Length: 168
Image 1: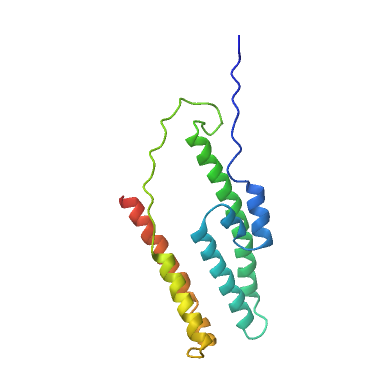
Image 2 (image 1 turned 30 degrees about the vertical axis):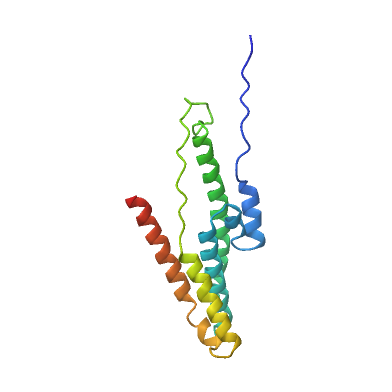
């Protein structure tokens, strides 16, 4: 009688590595998880909080507390996202939540690659801003006053992506 040996594949993402990377540098664990848009959003938020903290007149503990809370949040989020990615990988490979084998599932249909011109437009806009700043046509101090617009635009993009996926 031969016994079947089930060899489980290694989980796609390590929650420990995601947490450690996020601890060393904000959003690095999110990048490790492959969540590029979320990582960019976290970097912009972190940079904005640091800027606000540096520009406040006198000691303002509230902005420091918010910065610290966001730093800890992004570490926890990276760990939880890695666990969720691993859970989804187990379900796709025919394992339930308890990692017991289930009935084989049909192979998922290949998704049609789709892209977005959003990040191309963002990079072109940043390149244009930096080019104009090199020729002293615009002032960086004026631009840094409008950094929250970047967070708003990225948030609107995420909302639009959510609704476009939901309607598809």
